[in-house]
Length: 91
Image 1 (cartoon, one colour):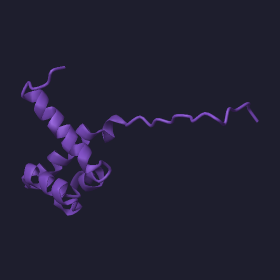
Image 2 (tube, rainbow, N blue to C red):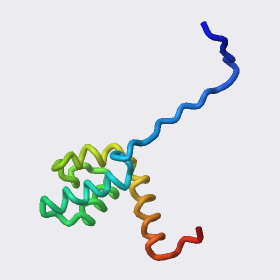
Image 3 (cartoon, rainbow, N blue to C red):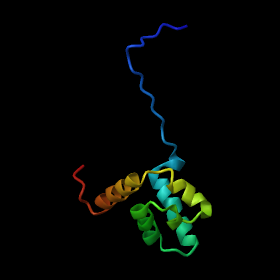
Image 4 (tube, helix red, strand yellow):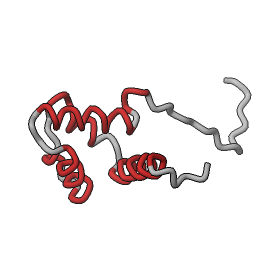
C-alpha cells in the first residue's frame, strides 16, 4: 500500500465535456424545439419556471439533455449572455 496522508482531503474535479456544457445543451434544445414547431423561448421558460420536463421535446434527446443541467445553471448562463450582449459587463 502506498504511503498516504489520511489527514488531508483530496480534491476531485470532473471536467464538463464540451457537448454537455450548458451553452451546448441550450443550443441543442433550442434547435430541437424549433424543428418540432414550438416557440423555444416559451417552452424553455415554462421548463425553468415549473421544472416540468414535458415542456421540452424529446426530439434530438433534448429533454434528456436539459434534465442533466440544473435550472439555476440555465438561468445563470442566459443572464450572463444577456449581460454580455448588452455591454453591461465591466470585465
